Length: 120
Image (tube, rainbow, N blue to C red; front, side, top):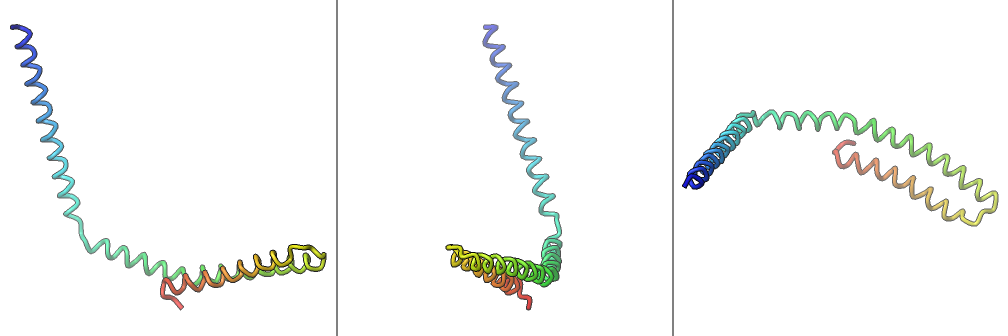
């Protein structure tokens, strides 16, 4: 009989603790929900508009830098292809195609970025 009373007391204590934990979890969730709903929805739109404006101001300088780097890479590649051609290497056409492909990629990439951001 004593064993049953102890077991019943432990079960009641366990149930109370679980109920208390559930109440605390629901209360914390409700508190977080209120804090999320209390935010100003216009602040996010303002932040995104500011970020878009800042990105648009950086597009032209970055595209110009990419074009300059492309020009330097193009000159170095042209010199490498010319030297291979003069030395009589067998893979001149492969080097020439890689060089032309990289130059076209840099130019088209800069134009695509400008078109994506609606600049120029």
